[in-house]
Length: 254
Image 1: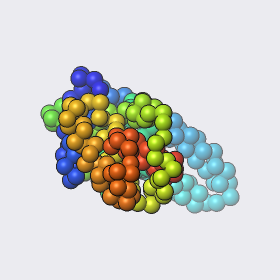
Image 2 (image 1 turned 180 degrees about the vertical axis):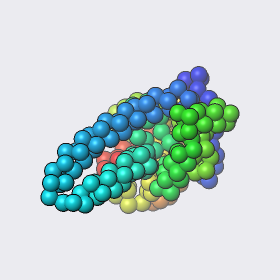
Image 3 (image 1 turned 45 degrees about the horizontal axis):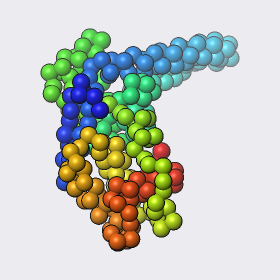
């Protein structure tokens, strides 16, 4: 992880210390530009469709203009207010623009955002977007965690996302416990899986003694949930890799 990025240290309820790289104004502006272009393209397509069908309806229905105007306002309202919230909720804190810029919204506790947080952080977008998002840039520039008003209200932060790279680098090639693991997803909650995934993704940045201690704590908790005794499982990190792999193979996370 690059030292150029500001860091956010989060202490989880499990007493695990996680470190994230905060997304700066540049990355967030790139994501916003990408998303705005998508919104603009969709808005143009909607306007053309409404104009085309509205003209035909007016030939047969006297109230067509009023209804088409109402429909247009409703659709554009949903496009503006719902685009960011819906994508961030369904895509684990990402929109197409954020995915392109490789950033992600998470809760201040390090967990994936909830539906409430996704809606709440975008509720204040009307204020954040004033003066071409000048308000958001000013507030984020003054805040040590680069949060805009919506983030402060929802309790969220935007961080650099490294999953696309880490998905192929933090697993070893050998599966060690696949024959002994049953329905992992039936015992491990999405929150616990997120904890495993974040640890595996960040472990190379941790001091050796901290890394070993955290692996021991997490593996102990997961082993308890799966009813696998320490003597019957491999080294802690190998065990966590296998659990995460099996959970992913169950296609229940993404």
